[in-house]
Length: 218
Ligand SMILES: [Zn+2]
Image 1 (cartoon, rainbow, N blue to C red):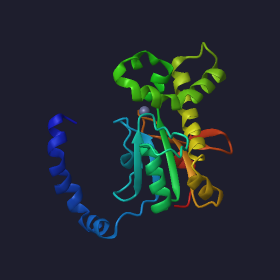
Image 2 (cartoon, protein in one colour):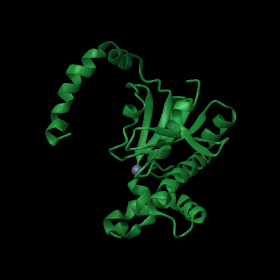
Image 3 (cartoon, protein in one colour):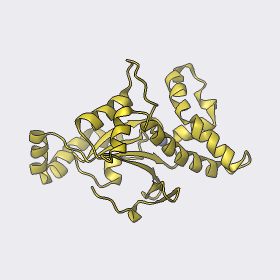
């Protein structure tokens, strides 16, 4: 999209999409939101949650951050934006699903393996934030060895990171309680930027498998 498109796009959106879905939009404004799922994804501009899932407004409650990380639960009164989104989705919106979605060619995962670009003083928060990917990085190196092909190492780290963030989700008492009671299901996804395909983590086979092969009650 050109820069011009960015600023004139809203008019096009109103005239086309909004007009075609006028009734649904009014309904959403009147009744409020009742999303099916909390989606935790990467800020990467190439990964568009609503587009990849063919979702409509009101379907997904979304929080995106660099690397689709979930910091372990901390009861400290700080500015925890992802934790706040989790709390709101779980306790107020009562979502039934939480999706952690990683993706191929993730810059955050690359930066964890090659920290040289993080040396700037201006990246103080990013350096700290990316430490949430240290454990999956170590696991990937341990599994593949030091001489592993770089792309293979990155793809594995992306997958292991999604699993690691799901483990972090379970440190939130409100999430753990509802998962144990089978009120919430957790999902780990990897979105392929080149093909649009999503693979999901199957904890029974321990593999990432095509999402199209998963049957689930919504
Ligand atoms: Zn990313």
